[in-house]
Image 1 (cartoon, rainbow, N blue to C red):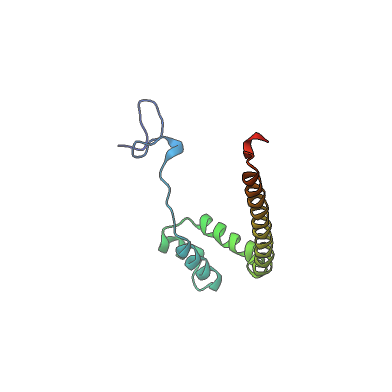
Image 2: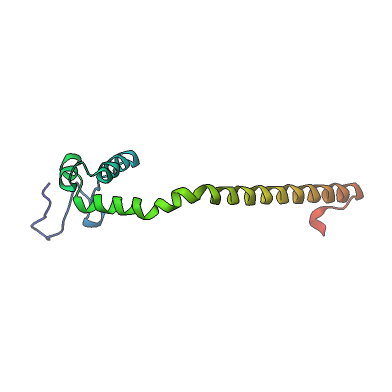
Length: 118
């Protein structure tokens, strides 16, 4: 099947419409490897692009993404500790609430009151 349909001039690729065309998906490991090579500057971006079959603009985007987010790599441990302690606090509160509700339910059953009666 051709890329351009001469009948209605719509772009098609393997039976998909223009918005559904297949895209290359690159693994995070490959992206990391390419960006590290870019940062070493032993090869030009054009050389890397032709070697890996990725457009140079995409390589620049990946590199910029890594460089822009580098500070977060060093601060994540601090954030992770805060998130973990907040999570543990929430779990403890929920277990306390479950215990309280279980006790109340047992008391209501002992008195012969159905909990859905109010």
